[in-house]
Length: 148
Image 1 (cartoon, helix red, strand yellow):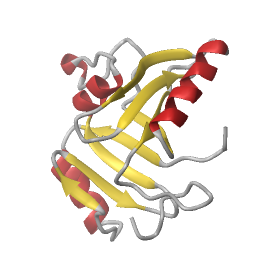
Image 2 (image 1 turned 60 degrees about the vertical axis):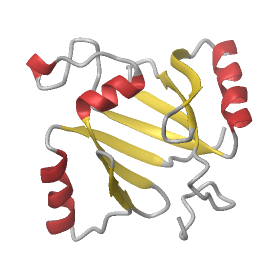
Image 3 (image 1 turned 120 degrees about the vertical axis):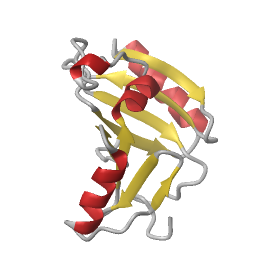
């Protein structure tokens, strides 16, 4: 598998305040700002902001609202993603992960926004999403295309 990252997404308590922080303090421009998620295109990858309880739900882990979204289950309120070029590439990768004993949190599945994805965890419960997004162009190096 290539050493790269497509998305780095953090779970946030106040989406609007965090979006404004990055826009006003860092001077960043949003790439997408709709349906409860915010994306900023950086140098070859995308930085995302997503409500932390929804990020936990998307991954398939529990978050504890009493603990401000964090729980005793190791959820650190962020995920990393690598986008691939097809659903088949995602499926093939998960077959390899299973053979290697990787902790599969959520098997690949079609999702409401039109993509396809699954989640795994490393040995310290850092969550990785492996996805195919038909709306996101990748260049020949696997970076987010500058025209996305």
